[in-house]
Length: 261
Image (cartoon, rainbow, N blue to C red; front, side, top):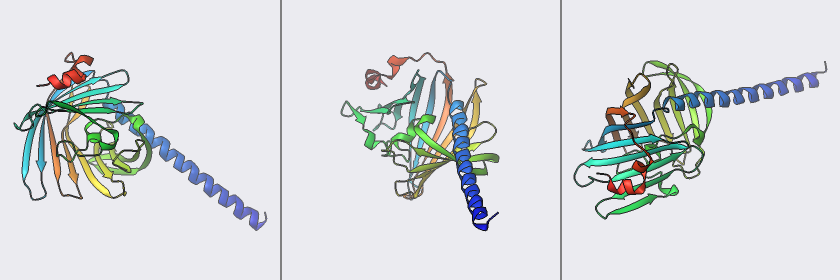
């Protein structure tokens, strides 16, 4: 075989192998992410208590108490978050309509001025009520909202995990990409690294204290978001999970948002 032909064949083989490997990483990453998404679904409706602890760069802290209601729908999920304390934010509530195949919608009710404010698509990267969770972090995004690539494997929380890179399809997302650690036993998300629009590491999310409810629904008891750029962090502590409580669409309307107490 002429040397030039042999070199050409070898080069083509290398290119083909690289393409196949890249396609496999995309396919496997999407498959893993889809299974992780499925672990969060099928609950019907739920109500849960939430404590939000804010910690500033100098160690100063503030605590807020909330109630969270959620409902699965044919095309997505509705969530209503209601602040109970402290007094200056009591009654403030956030309504989120999260969809699989179209743009999400969010409304914030501010009782001090008795006004509902819609959170625009360009504003969802902003901080939610002074926390390190953005408005787009508050909702649980559906699998369809990202593209995926499997990066590799690594231990997390003492378990073997996959590292999957996901890229938001939303052009107004505050993130260029996210690296997600998903355990290989139950497909639970334990860690997420968020990269800002300059592709610099912005925040790290860590979920812990997982428990199973009604022999079916795994949920973390704590979620921590650490901002590496401003040295602030927010800890969410979940309690009193209840499922199948009888919520319906009427509990997640804008009228319900204004009536929330």
